[in-house]
Length: 231
Image (cartoon, rainbow, N blue to C red; front, top):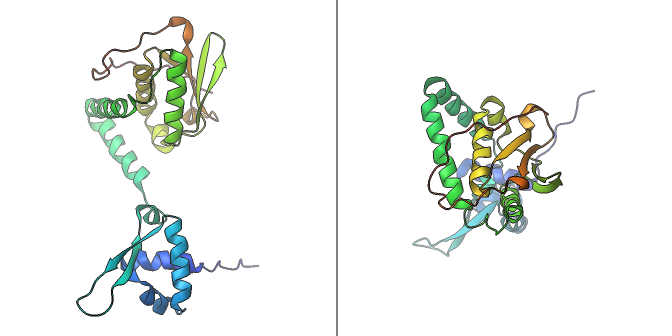
């Protein structure tokens, strides 16, 4: 028995029309949807509340000012994008044709991330810095938390935001571990990663080694391979 095709909601149709036309007024949307303007404005209000649509006031030479609606960045993200695929192809090309350029890119990326996180990943003790790092990572979508471990801590990331890229380019995992070392001021060890089949990425931090707090984060740390253990 064939499955009935789902009928798009009015709000979904509004988003599609704004994507197609760019900018539309409520009366024009009402005409295109064949519904009254009051209903359209109610839906637009909900879309604005959800951050998917925004409005500006258009002041024509003749006539009354009118609100013109368009999609926000969040609204645009409702439509298919292929960022991961393009990024994967670009990084794979670099790795195959110029491994040194890929290493330079990852080092440059770590510089930017270290500068961005530096004011947040702070604390007198390694444990405090690890907690702060987990909080920053969670804000970036990694769903990170810190667990106690014999002689140290485990920094656990329940979501990998670059999983599709890292599956083909393990250099990303290595680079991330180097960033953690730089921010925490001590050596770290990967115990498990999502791309190796684990349900989460786990980074071991040994408190017994008492790594020193780096004095100058603007100086890149030496390139060093992080230990990657299959789950």
